Image 1 (cartoon, rainbow, N blue to C red):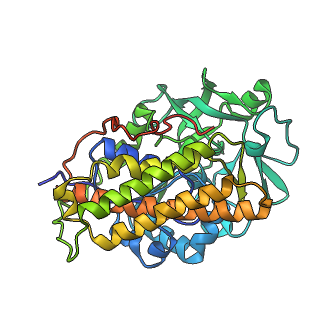
Image 2: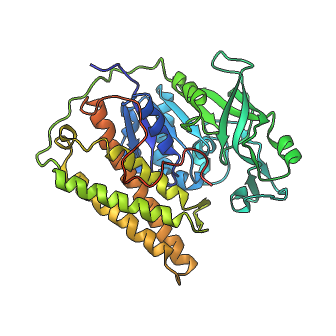
Image 3: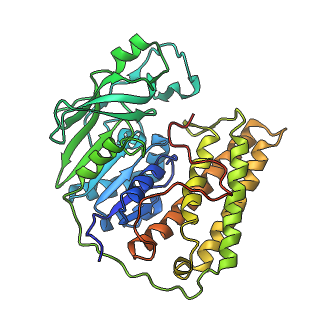
Length: 412
């Protein structure tokens, strides 16, 4: 019998970027298996009623709000009011903040406002494509990226410091309805400045980096930096502490044997398709392509993050006891999607396509990457929770067919 764990849901729907896979990484590393992956349709169908904690990570805040809509906003409000915990990072932190702009105005759950908001933009000195986003008649701008130093005022660690990476998340102005858990205190050796350092310091340091709001019986936790990034273990531990005392009644689940389990040959075909997609994605990373999808800039390195999320775990499932518990049709669909990865990447590499065609192809690619990664992780965590795949810490892949390890630091 496994330990009782809070049931957690990770948002993987419209607008979600690659950073939600970091949640999967830290749960996997800590042998935490009570995890499910939810898109906007799941939430509209009532899936939040089955979980205790809901994570929304980075991406395009406007696209997330459009995808969830009023139905999703109402579901989140009810979920938290009835005792649920909402944890938002980056785009997921912007989402519940006070806003008059549609569709964000459907999610006005926390009165705090954005500090990194202006009508007069400072001059960008790096990454102008990631520097700012239109926000009505103003702009949300990002002074820095990469690691920042935070001063804690929550978790019983008042005055202590922790580091976490910042990739476009908000600087927050405190409000009467929220408690400040951490503030931006300093820069680090890894901080990348997108504007003049002195201006960046005035804009960011001293503002709130993490806040908590009690709402009904539940809580909203909003984080500007990515506390879920798997390279920042101390920040990861703070996330786990948030719901350490909210254990649900969920226990080990029995894994029902499928009527048509996947066979070894079929699974090898799937592995081959994923491996081929990895090679194609690595080749694309040598290009200078970027794509503006909605309000967010995507670059080739994010493609391989999704593929590696599948690959490094797919090798662990290549065992008789695991294959006997996986439905053949699930692997058939994942194989088709892996083939689509490679084909679409190849089209993106081809010359002579218009910008509009490239953007449409990239949008399709990231859609199927997101769906395939969520589907595979659903299988993976189900097997872990059922005890079929023994709980263990991640190990570095040493299979000869590996091209290179998953990017662990910033996605440049």
